[in-house]
Image (cartoon, rainbow, N blue to C red):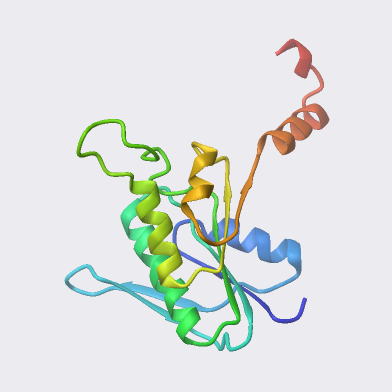
Amino acid sequence: MPNIKIFSGSSHQDLSQKIADRLGLEVGKVVTKKFSNQETCVEIGESVRGEDVYIVQSGCGEINDSLMELLIMINACKIASASRVTAVIPCFPYARQDKKDKSRAPISAKLVANMLSIAGADHIMTMDLHASQIQGFFDIPVDNLYAEPAVLKWIRENISEWRNC
């Protein structure tokens, strides 16, 4: 597959490797580190000029660090002239904060959508959003994939007594 590069954030490197293996590609070189004041530093270790870049970073674990790392990676690829940057976010950060349920409450999922767009993302791929309305927070394409069909297929194929569970 020419012109495709896959990079992994630090949140789920195993998933990134499995995606790359499935596509017959190598995971791109990225160095992430923290400065002494805990700022995140990301260095993309290879050229992305004219490439279709996919950055895999989940919004789980250290959510704020993972989100900031993703934003920096997106921006680094855009300013290095990547032709397109797709953020692959299996667990969308702040997805549960998708509506104003109290006075003075933020809609944090919308803020995250804005930050991803401003950082330079051209496309978002995510899974099982807390609420489908989050897709409407973006002005860029969003693919909200559903895990249920794949999970059901795996259960039917691998658990002989699945009907009696």
